[in-house]
Image 1: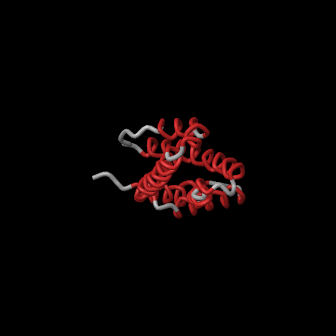
Image 2 (image 1 turned 120 degrees about the vertical axis):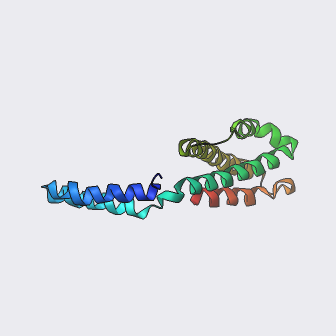
Image 3 (image 1 turned 90 degrees about the vertical axis):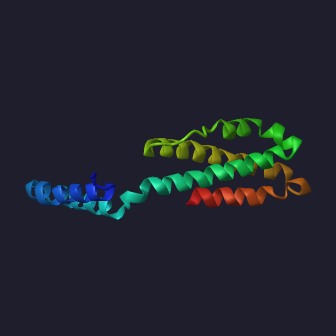
Length: 148
């Protein structure tokens, strides 16, 4: 049976503590090595991929809401055509590895950051327009998601 990621990291931390640290002569290097071990201990290695997948799903879902908002109005469709194209370009194939999930999250988060900027520009140009009263709410959702 293969060890879990957390078990593997626990083994690495033990090697760092029991084998490497005693051989390190510099107090500074030894302190840095302890910091590295502490950081490795703070991560939930078994669920890391699941957390990234969950965050990715949330961001992609928000991008779908943005795409729907853009598509609901002809002026917005024209103005946000490039953004809509980028949203739709997100691959929706199966993600088998952590690297694939992380790459999709990075791509989706970049699009979301651009959407936040673009919606801000749109809102400033269309303040007071009844047809765009949902823009600030959508932008707040974006900012909240990016802050996580």
